[in-house]
Image 1 (cartoon, rainbow, N blue to C red):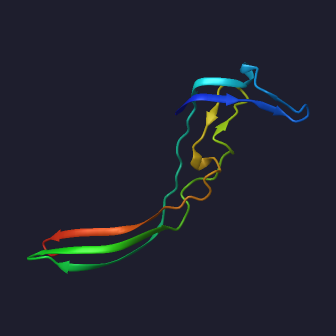
Image 2 (cartoon, helix red, strand yellow):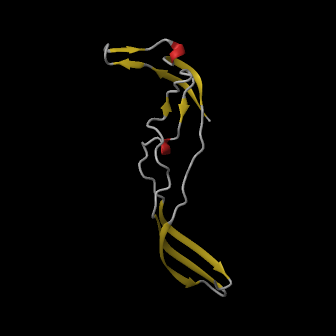
Image 3 (cartoon, rainbow, N blue to C red):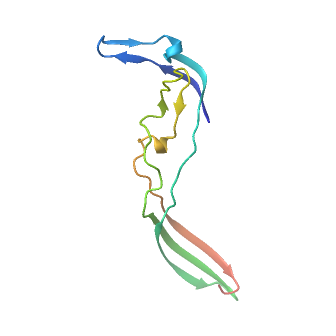
Amino acid sequence: SATARSLATSGYYPQYDAELFDPRFMGFGTFNRTGLGGGELELDTSFAAVAEAGIKRGAGDNSSFYIGLFLNYGLNTINAEATAPGLVRYNANSPSDFESQGALSSGYAGELRLISYGLKLRFAFGGF
């Protein structure tokens, strides 16, 4: 569940070229400290291609030091299809109660793949 400090809504009617900022019971106006109904975050399992290369050197008796580079590249997208556009949706049954959805399922995020890369440092005891 999410909350908003303030949410201002209006409705534009092109046939009259008019924008209405009220009536409030129809969901138009400024709403303070609005509780937005939340949903569950739905993510899929990620499959990744992994590459790593590095150098291992002895650092004394039964210990070693490793330095390397790694790359993990997501092979599939993890976010679900967009259910409806927008972050805040209009509820026709109860216009002053707004429904929200996360940015990942709003259609704004596009395809989401997990990608990570970096430098790996390791000090090992016991000759590993």
